[in-house]
Length: 263
Image (tube, rainbow, N blue to C red; front, side):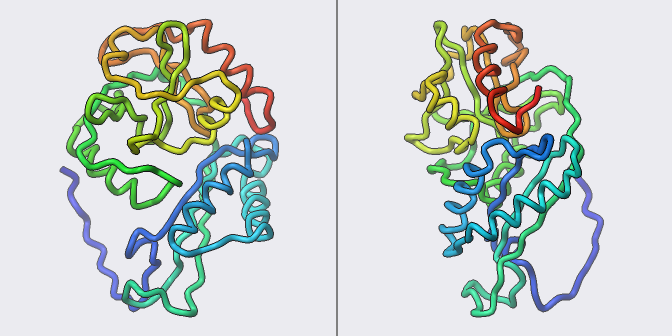
């Protein structure tokens, strides 16, 4: 249990994202001044903000992109863009003068060479369709992590009612009988990944309900998001799998065709 070190603040206004979870975010790498599938990140961000009644113009979206590229300063940089309801006084009803706030965080990207070890875990909360990356969803993820108590070396692979969903921050690709599959989102709980949607459109991956039993004999696994792009998994539930499987090459070759991707 982490001990809380008290820092007490007296305020009359709070950011609505902090107070009520009214916020969405996007995470991506900026490589050589390029963002992988930028327009898809903005489409997803807009979908999320629309759920709160906010809209974003093309001009505002371009300002965010330019600021992210500026913060990268020509380096391989991991960027998180968070948009919240902005500062406001107490109450759920949004004040007329409320102005959304945009926060940009930049971190020099260092390729993590550590092998990925997945451990399947049961999601302890109800699932629903995910339209975007809502900050409030990750509050549940933090609660779930506390319940699972996994070793720091293990990455949780979230499952629900006998179905594989995704990791907490990436989609999963499962090589089963020579075909790549990714869990469908019919029952909810699956991240609306930018990389995932591209692989589905290009026909390299099929979307279907992926039973947990597949994890016992699948030939290979990969995690995909806009930071890793697609990275092979080395262990699942203590079983070593082929992290150098030849089927992964087609996935990586497709992604390398797009600006803003580097392995």
